[in-house]
Image (cartoon, rainbow, N blue to C red):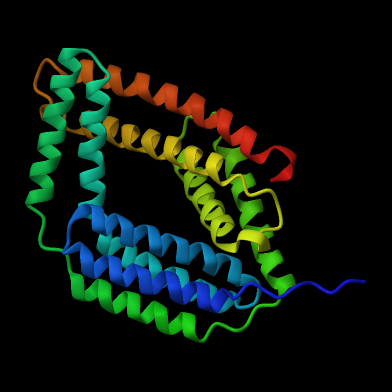
Length: 265
C-alpha cells in the first residue's frame, strides 16, 4: 500500500494568511477596499482553521471564535460601502426613476458610513496578532488529517447548498454563501492536497452571485424598515428593481451550485 505524500503545511499557510491580513490592514489606513482585502485574508485563514479541526478541534474552535471578533471590528465600514456600491450598481441597470431612488439609498448609506467612529485599528492589530500566536502552536497535521478536514468542509458546503437551494429564507442563502466561501478558499489554498475536483472559477462565480444577492436582500430590508431613505413616492420602484435583481441572481446561483457539486465535488 502506497503511503500518502507529504502533508500540506497547515501551520505555515495559516501564518502566511495572517501576516498578509496584517499587512493589508496597515496599508488600508481604514479605507474600505483595504479593509476588504484584510477581511478576505482572514476568511481564508478561517477556512484553513476549519480544515485543521481534524488535528486540533479545540484550537480550531478558539481560533474561529477569535477571528469572528476581529471580523466584527472590521465589518461595519466595509459592509456599508458594499451596500452603497450595490445600490448604485443595481440602479444603473433599472429605469431612471428606480435609479434615482437607489441613488438616494446609496447616498444615505454613504452618510451613515461617514458618521461612524474611526475604525479601531489597534483592536484589529491585536486580534490579528493573537490569531498569529494561535497559528504558531498549531500541531503538525498528517496528510490523512488534512484530507479528513477538507472532506468536512466539503460536506458542510453540500449540506448548506441543500438547505439553501431555491430557499426563500435569506438566512439559509447566507449560510450557503458562507460555507461555499469556506470551500473555495480551502480548495484554493490546499491546491493538490484538496481531495475532490476544485472547480475554483465556478466557486468564485457562485460566491459572487450569492454575495450580490445578499446585498440586494439587505437593501430590501433597509427600505422596508426606512422608506424615507428613498422618498415618499419612490420605495415601490426601488423595491421592484431590487426584487427583480434578487430573482435573477438566485436563479443563477442555484444553477451554478448544482454544477459545482455534481459528482460529489
